[in-house]
Length: 182
Image (cartoon, rainbow, N blue to C red; front, side, top):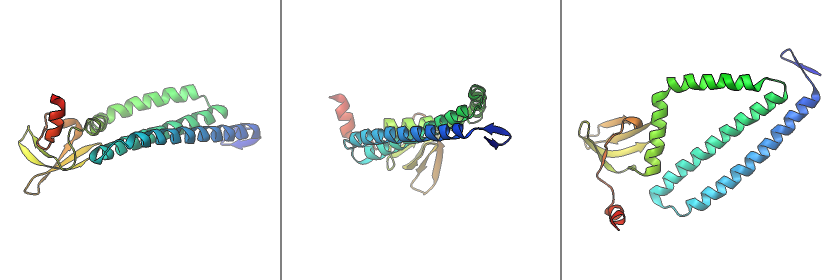
């Protein structure tokens, strides 16, 4: 028996936790590899800007998978060590709700950023007009939180992604509109 932070833990529990950890990591790497292969195969069909969007979305999927697996590993180990995981999850749920309310705009920006990238509403290098104030410029960067537009004077307007509404894209290629008409 070991005494860790005032809690008696048997060597057997530590070995079991290590085995759980090893099993979860093996499963994680297998799932991650399968997803990477699938994304790589799907990504071969993309070109140019689509490839950049696809790469961004792929990285987000792998990042979510990584954090999900980390949470699962921690919960399995804590449960094996005798910690009441149900109360911990309830507490985390409450904490998540509080953080969600506090970071509401950031979450909106993140979701809007994903939508902008996934739907190809506009891309870096596109000329756009912001109807709210008539600001016209070239998109310099698109992030998950903000988009930067620079006009011909060199002035840069930084827009929160969730506030981008009715943006006019002057750079959509004609072949896209032709494809829609066919």
